Length: 347
Image (cartoon, rainbow, N blue to C red):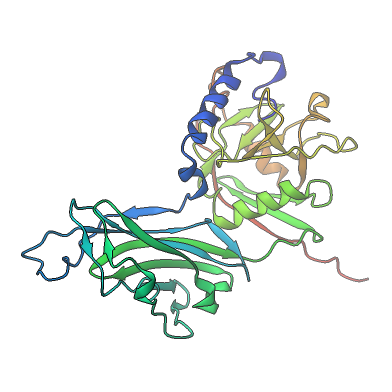
């Protein structure tokens, strides 16, 4: 988050410490960062072999997770299914559990998707006995089983088998980003639309990242958490606190020839570091030379200056501590959509 508050009232160290603390907390929990859609679910299970549900306690637990929160069309769509023995006794698993056959995929628009073939998994590849506290599982590209899952859509994935049920997890498959194409971003706010030309050539990684996050719905219903009249507005923080980020950072992409002017869209830089925040952005409300060469510019407003004026006019707390200059009335980003720019009409 490059300049974390207006240059004329910046408090050195305060925001950097908070951001650093946030990053340390995130680094010690990589499973949360790497698998934002990963969910573990306790479930009732079939009893161990040789007993009925009344005679033996439910001892199995299933976990289901997608390894990435989104995938591009045509790419592998990886999921992990694991079965845990939560009891203090071994679980007899000679019959095996149908891990592949238990996977179910549905699309809200197309309904249940049908596997291309039988999806049984050889029980001989499973442990005959799951020791107390032990587990086994698999990682599978489900597009090899259900080819239709490679098409752009939202998919609900669930798993059920041996009396164990893992609740549904959701993943999005989005159109592949084209680094040679021009893109436009449409940000719907409470006051109307802001439309930006994105700079794929000058900042390809930032534009692709913005496209990826927008296509997942990451920005939907987040807020503009900071507005400094005549200076800037900031958004893209999933927490709305001014210190949040998506669990990763970006290498800056500085183009010396690009200048910050009203409507310039730039990445927020992490103070005291060499990285940009993975999701937060700045919209300039007037030219600011001190940002030139310091922030990664990846877009410029093409329509919606009246909306920007309305956002700028919202009263704020005016405070110099996080969250800085927080609008007294929430400014909600209802949706962010990034699409390819239309080709100019001939003639």
